[in-house]
Length: 305
Image (cartoon, rainbow, N blue to C red; front, top):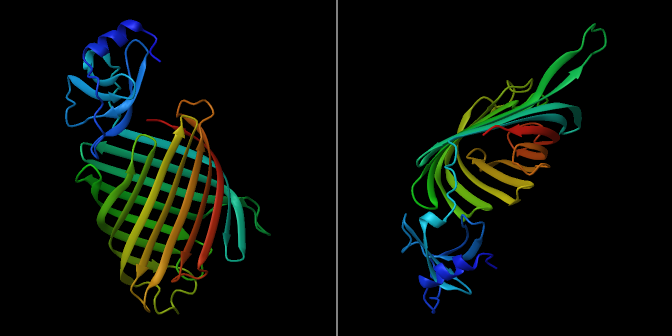
């Protein structure tokens, strides 16, 4: 309910008594006014301009709202950066390890272009028998560099390179995948984004004590990659990101490389700055030995954008 009767009267002067049926180009929005009131209705983008916003309100009808009455949101910052670290546990086949993890996510957007860089490394501090000092060993990690260009409201083109390493593997400690193709936003609004992408790729694995005796290890193969990523922000207190990336390499039929990851972030202060996160990842790669790697971590972090 509007708290200011003068605002209601002013809006009704510009309204029409009949509300048109929404079309496929209209969307539900919430508009904030400078006096503190909010209006929820269906936006008519074909008739909305920089000076006037056309809104179909369920009670007030068709409203013409001048831009001078709206609260203007500050433009999004081009740089985004978050860093986090915490405790982790890893399971590669029957090998178990625990230690710490460090993660960095950053991106830069300008116009239709966006570049995103992600990196993660897990490590453990140990002292083997006969050693006088503790050592820090990096056991596992991954990185991704992804370029995206928006081609339309939902369609985009991408190019990406990913790298994953697991020093506990006997065949294929390192995996590289390069891919390019098209993506599409199946869902795109203020709280939820679901993007799917597909394209040709190249995959190569190398490293490990058993690599020299393996006929596949060290070679590059043509492949195809498909990825789905869901980002959901139900409130200012929480967000969840679920990503599944599948690469099928054309060797001995189709060899599967699938990475599934989930990250739940909690912002206890509700300011989208300080956060705690629970992260899980499962990797299955038919060209590696062992084929399965699982990891989980609890982290504390900060967003600096």
